[in-house]
Image (spheres, one colour):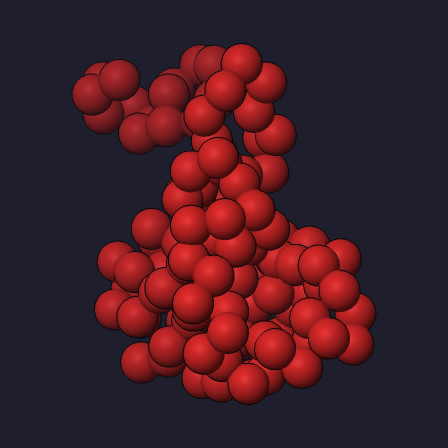
Amino acid sequence: MSHVQIYDRAMCCSTGVCGPQVDQTLPTFAADLDWLKQQGHQVQRFNLAQDPAEFAANATVQRMLSEAGVECLPLVLVDGQIVSRSDYPTRENLALWTATKLSVKTMLPTADGGCCGDSGCC
């Protein structure tokens, strides 16, 4: 299993999903990280405002911050390698980088038979 580390910009909380106007990207990314954990991967997320020691302890992160500044955040590392910077990756990208299989919905819900066809369960 992979070790995924996310180094976030300074945010009000560990996920940035509080407050009156939440950027939809943040709860989506938080859900994607929960999904990644459920697949058995180790996921760590660090917030610059709350975990500055974690930023200082990682030489790769220190180098990126000295070269690109905080604009490189969020920074995503998989098994110690930078895979993404300055943007939150999609679940598809997280799956690709961690060699995790995505489940594909084989049937979309329909108005006439529901998602279960004619079984009557929905």
